[in-house]
Image (cartoon, rainbow, N blue to C red; front, side):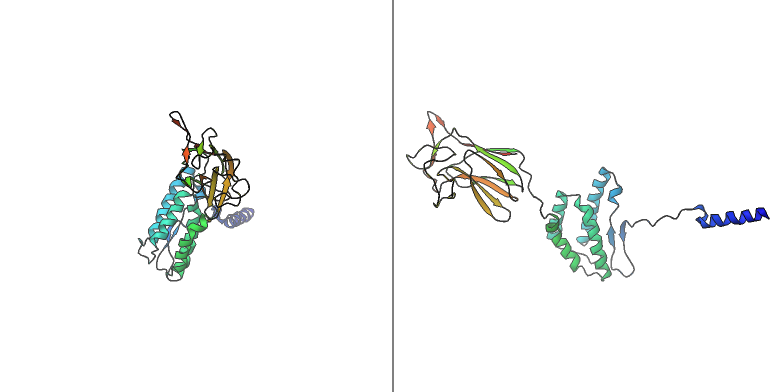
Length: 278
């Protein structure tokens, strides 16, 4: 009798434990899948977080190509988006490939919504069109100016030597103090510091506020927003970009035909310009 009771208890324990077998959780979908009634399928990206660095990079590119194939209408499911919007999106992804992991999940949700609505892709297409601007908001499209750029100042020409800068880039602008030029016939020989006896405060010259001198080197910053600011740079100036944009230089003058560098013997002066990232 005792043996029978023990056998019943053991059987109950095994049954309560599921016969000793573990029940596996459903594996997340990966690849193309659709539901009943849908006009097409949606792409489920792989689990990027479970991959090593090399495999992850390869998977991102494969996922991008897969999504684009559907957007271009290559799956025959009624999905076909504007080629210009696709190109703009692809350009952003090439610059920031890690974003592919995020947008692949967003794309899946837009696709599921569209397919559940019988193939209405209006919202999905708008998401694709707006994605580049949203994903790159606050990003700088330019390489940081963390290098040295050398050139020579043309005193017979207006704004010149443009260079792209990102917000918060710090740049030192420096030019030679040993090279002299005139900004008018028989005028004083000056260098990039300008004529200390000729303030241009209130004049019609590009730099016409306190600290501006005739003939001095100027820095102009033009932000991507369109805002412009002129600075009296002189022979050395330290600048921090308030936003993404472009810097360029010229001397504080508005007539160019009578400007000339000093010639001593057979040697003509030339003012060198250096932009150096800090």
